[in-house]
Length: 312
Image 1 (cartoon, rainbow, N blue to C red):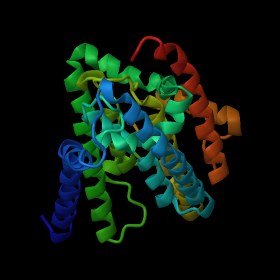
Image 2 (image 1 turned 180 degrees about the vertical axis):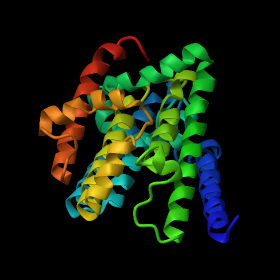
Image 3 (image 1 turned 45 degrees about the horizontal axis):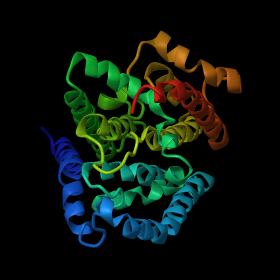
C-alpha cells in the first residue's frame, strides 16, 4: 500500500470516527452541559417554562433567518460550502431527540430553537416531509425499527468514509476529475453519506421514543429541506463541472448515478420532471438547479400530506 493511499484511508477513518462520535456521544455530552443552563421543567412549572420560551423565541426566529441568509448567500456567491453549512444547521435540532425531557427546550433540546417558527405555526408542519419516511418503514418490515434506523446511520458513515478516501487519494495524485472507486457508484458519495447518516438520525424518534411531557413530530420537513439544499449544491456544482470539463464530464454524468446507485431506467424515470421543466435532462446554472429542487420539493411535500396522517 503506497503512502498516498494509506494517508487517504487514515484521514477518512478519522472523519468517520468523528462522525460516529458526533452521533453516539456528543449529544449526551452536550445535554449534560446544557441542562445546567437550560433545565427541565415539570407540569407544575409550566409558567416558568412558558416564560423561558417567550424569552428564547426571538432567538429562534433570528437563527432561522440567519441560516436562510447563509444558504442564499452561498448560492448567490457560488460559495457552496456556506450553503452546505446552512443545510447542516437546518438539520442540527434532530439531535434534540436524544434528550428525554418534559420541557422541549431543556438541555440539548435547545437546538429546537431553530424550529420555533414552524412549531409556533403548527408542529404538524414538521411532518410535511413524511413521504421520505417510506424507505425506513419498508426496511422496518424486514428488520426491527431500531436496526433499520441504525443501518442508515452506519451506511451513511461508511459511504462518507469511502467517498472521502477516494477524494483524498485522487487529490493527492493530482487527479482533476475523480471518477474511480466511490465515484463510479455515485457522482456525489460524500453528499450521499451525509444524507444517509442524517436520515438515520431523523427517524430516531420512531424507535427511540418521544419527549416525555410533550409531542414534537418526527422532523421530516427539516431533513427534506436540508436534503434539497444539498441537492441544489450538487446540481450547481455539476453545471460548473460541465463547463470546465465539457464532453468528458458529460460522459461521466451519463454513466454514473447522481446519488443512489440505480438501474438506468429508474434513473431516467426519476429525472423526467427535470426534462419537463427545463426541456433538457440536467440544469446548466445555479438558477435552474434551484428550480429543479423546488419542483422535487413541492412534489415530495404534496405527497407527504396523506402519509403524515398515518405516521407520527
